[in-house]
Image 1 (cartoon, rainbow, N blue to C red):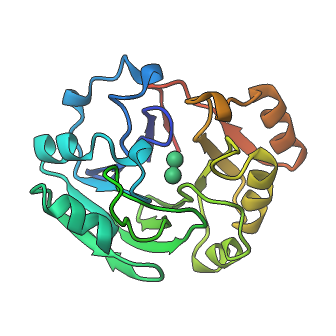
Image 2 (tube, rainbow, N blue to C red):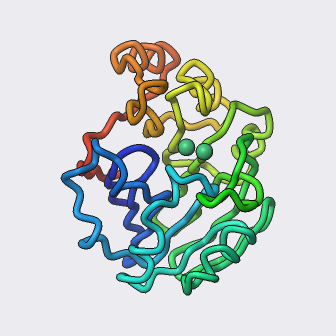
Length: 225
Ligand code: NI
Ligand code: MN
């Protein structure tokens, strides 16, 4: 699987022939100014919750690429009114798409749409594909239900927020990596705003001490996982 980071909590994962984009927040992100949103062509856009820093470019990208949005019912309804096509899910449910199976799982966070309307509840995703399995935690606190994710499948990697203040910080993310029994972690939700700036070396060493590998990708960088 090819993983490309677009800054903040936005990234693309190529799974077989299909491209999945998560939580697009590119055009308002000054750190991602070199990413050309008009060139993003994906098959699906998965949204963990309705906050602006996760949905800013959904309408543009879904319309230019014909991508189907996968998110909770309320988010799909909200984007549906803008002519965006979607597949609604809710916590605990799974559905098999043409790239693999997605299970929507618990996240401890809030969710409202950019105009203040109700955005359902925040979620994470477990994605199981022939090429491998991964967990996208979304914005979340550390929570004990993460232990259940290790019961769903063996993960190849997990995408965890580490920036603190709005989500768990890196200390809790180390515990989350243990709970989900995954050794390869991709860091997201850090450095974008003053409240979430992190010391990369400190974070790196804490994960190493726990026997975990954490990746900080440059914006625009791709790695194979
Ligand atoms: Ni949020
Ligand atoms: Mn956020």
